[in-house]
Length: 203
Image (cartoon, rainbow, N blue to C red; front, side, top):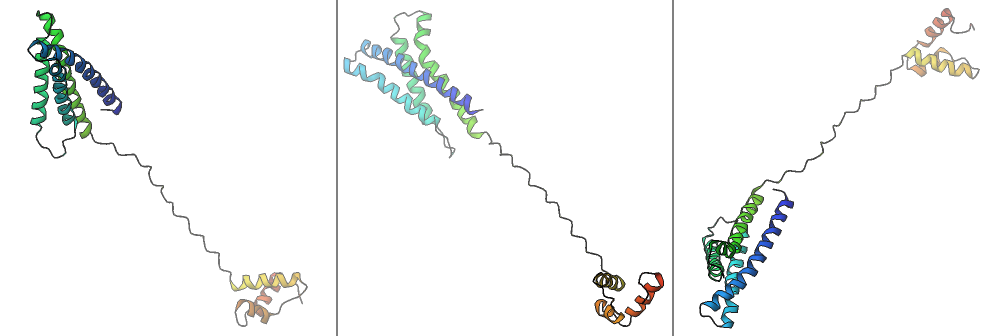
């Protein structure tokens, strides 16, 4: 049950209770005067009945967390409804069926409204609360590891150094190329190879 429908039902029950309380007070006072009560007692008697009904109603609306029996609250509520029903019927100016129906309507309407609201409150308390939808966690895509730079061969290191030196007007020797590449007696063979391939100007 949605909260809006429950509020509407509470408001309607409150209207029924106010109407029943007004009719119960008027008829209860007339009933007490008719059957021997003085003016002061007749004015207080309906308040006793309505107070008993209000106390029992509030007790019935409380959440029953410990699961205890509510027979006392229901007994007080039914007893108050019975008194109100007797007062309404007993003070009816018309004793026909329609007159009795009009007089009995307020307390019976209150009884049914309270019972319906009590059932709605019970359903509202036991309804599971829908869990809030959580946004899915972003999937972490592992970043690709940077590919290692290709390792230069001794000849490639020698060639890069050779071209830098030639751009500056110098011609490195084989021993110098060995120092750059970390080799031994390899620089002269590389220079000879480059000369044979035409990659090095003849000295």
